Image 1 (spheres, rainbow, N blue to C red):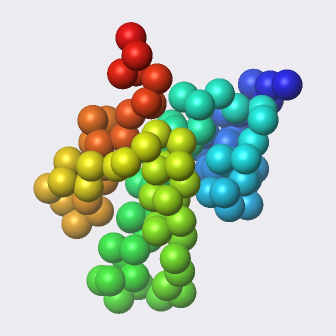
Image 2: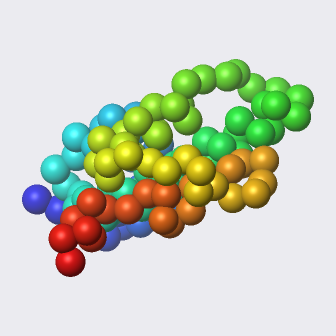
Image 3: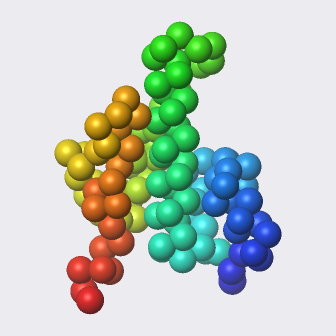
Amino acid sequence: MTMDQDQLQKAMLDPQSVFGTPEDVVASTKLTTDQKIEMLRRWEYNAANEAVALEEGMPGDESDLLRRILIALGQIAGPIDVELTAPTKQHGLSRQAVEDPRNDEK
């Protein structure tokens, strides 16, 4: 079973609006592994931006969302190389830091 295009596009732009938690993305049977990885990477980017905003004094609540996203990514893609991050406050993960383990078989 797959997700319809409108729902998939919405989930890619705002994963939390379709999936309540990163764990729900991992458990979804409607997404391919590549879609799950891309969705969690985007969610990670948004969560990192929110963490930086909180660090800089913007109002909001701290949460463990970023940690949970990284754990979910690790469950799907295997170990994440946290040394391969961007030189910004967000420390976004590079494409090489998170890769589909099936790519090693090619």
